[in-house]
Length: 225
View 1 (tube, helix red, strand yellow):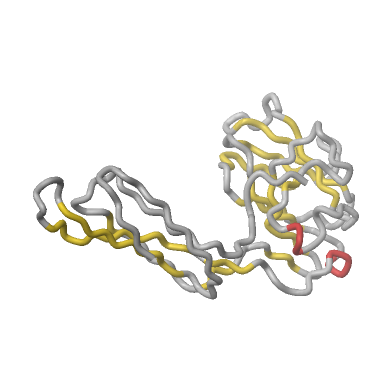
View 2 (tube, rainbow, N blue to C red):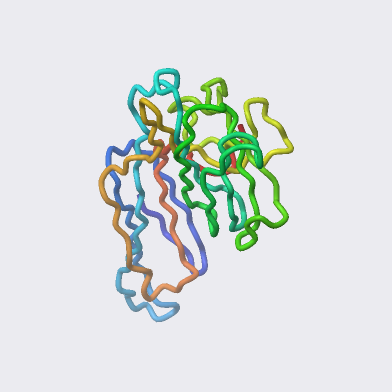
């Protein structure tokens, strides 16, 4: 599509398409210099669009039991340190401690063994492991938490236990779990998008937006269980 633009005018274009691979949208601009009548050389800009598929497979939490590993993406707003306990904090085995977990990082906790079924993680500010906790998260790994037992729960907020306790930190996004079967929530990227370039000669204030509406699994933020 195309449209004439007056000096200083902006226009937004929308296209709806079904994409089967990652692609690149490209806008081309031509024009005349103000008052001179001279031709401005055409310029282009590109916007890459990445198409991803949701995780697939026949993962059954019930067949995977005992769940002995959880993988979560930290969706909070600050860097943290986590102590993951195999049950109640301070009264069970400390499975792992990891400092410097930034928003978007993946935290993997192996060695759960499936019992006890309630796993508690204590959360501190980064660099303050063992200090004053910011709070804690709780995970029910017996497959009885309907918000954390299948492919459909990938990317959902987790950490508030089976009963959605508001006092718990619920800023973890389900990335996977493993037992006799494995759930991997990592999306599959289809094709490769490109990018680069910029508008030349028409001014940086001129911008075009051409986003196709494609199905993308919403891994973020901020869906609350």
